[in-house]
Picture 1 (spheres, rainbow, N blue to C red):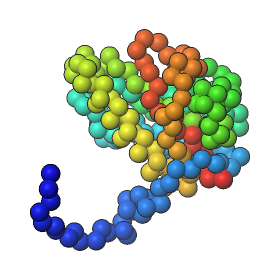
Picture 2: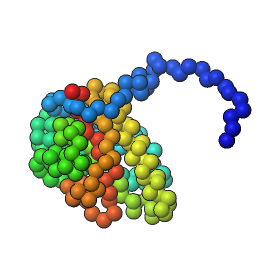
Picture 3: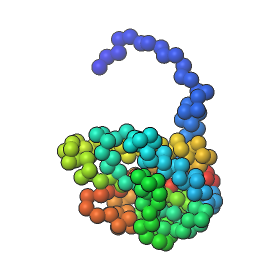
Picture 4: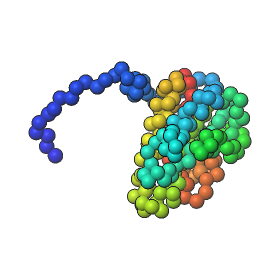
Length: 201
């Protein structure tokens, strides 16, 4: 494709709230040994996949089928007043459901090919895709829609973390089967993304 003419665009505005967040957003791989508050975690999870108005959620979804599940691995002492464990985020009630008690940060660190950010973060948010929820309507094309949706949710994690003075990094390099085993996933559910979240170190 040839470009025969050029149109100079006006400079972007950089003084809006969203513009400032986009400019400030960075991938953070080192974290302080400092716990999150439950309010902070609540805000990030709502921005990830929570409901906004009515049955609308924080991210777009093909056919409003929402093929993602969100899990949270809380390190020991990672969130004030919350015991270490693996939790499922239930967006319908905006609550965490304990899947397994204990500190899984070391296991998750190994499953994520020993990336230090996973072990040092007080919290890791794991996005899981459940293909059958969307392929039943869109066929194999639904897989692409599901992956795109994980990207939408991931960007919200970045922006919410930045707004709250936290940092995160998107991790896609991990042993799928190892992460599935840690989370106790069944059927065709598959991990798509891991986001360590904490105060920048």
